[in-house]
Amino acid sequence: MLDGALAFVKVSTEARSFDIRSFEDFSQSVYAGIRTTMRYAAEAQIAGVQGVLRKWRARIGEEAWRDLYTVVLSQWATSELNQNSIIIRPCMNPAKVATHLIDLPTAEPPSDPVFVALDNLARIVQDNIAAELVFPSDRAAADALKGPQDLLADEILDQLGTPEPGAPAYVPPGGEGNGACPVAHRAPAPRRGGAAYDL
Image (cartoon, rainbow, N blue to C red):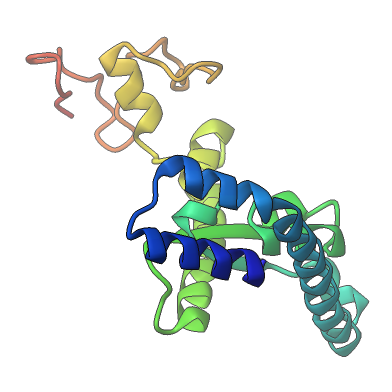
């Protein structure tokens, strides 16, 4: 790969120009080498991360490990199919990995990643508890409050007439979209301009 790169730079500087085609030819010539280094990098990443996880697991014990929360910080561009999440997932309790493995995309690497992870984890755990207390009889609303979905998302989509595909429509207890306000115990006033309800 280095020899190919040096040769490409030498030819380009001597010609004092290069074009897309010549760069693609160079890229193609080192592709096999790139794939080889990717394989070795993946092997090293798996061995390194899972090796650390095994040490932590032995240190905290199986009972604590079963309830382990894991926060993976990543930049948005690599937040989906993040390499760390992929490696950590099979090491966690399969019954809880869907709720306990938290991928947290950030705009840029945080100056204090431990604080950011703990702060977000505290908010998530707090939201889970609060959701069950605030909406004990409405699982859909509780799930919205404790997940990445905005609590008002379903209501706003409904009022705009654009429900999310596949999402169940929210029907308040005892009503078909015109339920009483849970605070004032009054039905909502007619919409004004299609934008809001008065309580």
